[in-house]
Image (cartoon, rainbow, N blue to C red; front, side, top):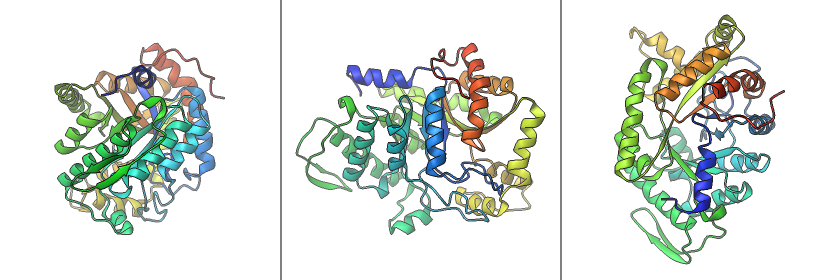
Length: 380
């Protein structure tokens, strides 16, 4: 457990708002919109630089990337161009002052000594604003690209536990030590510098299975789970269960979910924009390539087949928010009332859409008591 003054400061800064807000997947081409539109998000560094600085200025809390190594195909090769997340996070942290920026790290693909050193570098650059989103990996095509073996489900978490134990041991004040386990046999480990302030970074995980939830509650400060508005009541139960399980282990954990937001002065404008982006101009060939990877059969006889395809055209998971600033703020309040601590959400164009959101939605969330009073520079 984190136990010194800087650790409390690190976590209190992370927990300044009742509902924390961050952007999901800006390091990936197309973000989370599987669309053919030529002005779709490119995921270039120049776009990410503008987003990081604008998000920092208006008071967004964090950036959360997707760890992706290979595109999904289709006409646009959805997520075919991505920025590696630890180097991306380091660059974002170097040009911002407040944001927490996560690196999404596939434990089976990063040697723990290399990963520990890279993440310490990001943490030092930012004076303690780096976060680790540790993932076990599931995409077989990516593992094949690396020449790596994708382990069976439960063993993935056993490996990840040993990997994380090794990394956190290196982040501790231990010097010149050996680490021996089932998967690693490391001799004479020496890692300097240590994380900023002598305290490990915030750690997040998104395991959805019982094994994954157990891993998250045992090790992490934040648990990330996808839901939708039609299952929000059930999700509230999941939040309670996750917190209770963590408390049984003497820990507290934040619970986060994801969304895609289309906000406009009128509901009609917001809904028309969503339809234009994600339905009328969806890259259906990419959707059809993605669905089987997520365990969805392309079965046209399934009465829910078209609804499932539409869902995959706008982010695969999480919930869709379309409407006015009042609608968006009200929906975010429902998410908070269900027990969630934060939202990682996406826009069609993160940079173009953020100013209106900052000017119209953030003040409404402050009035609802979900955000502390802003002391940041308004978007322009």
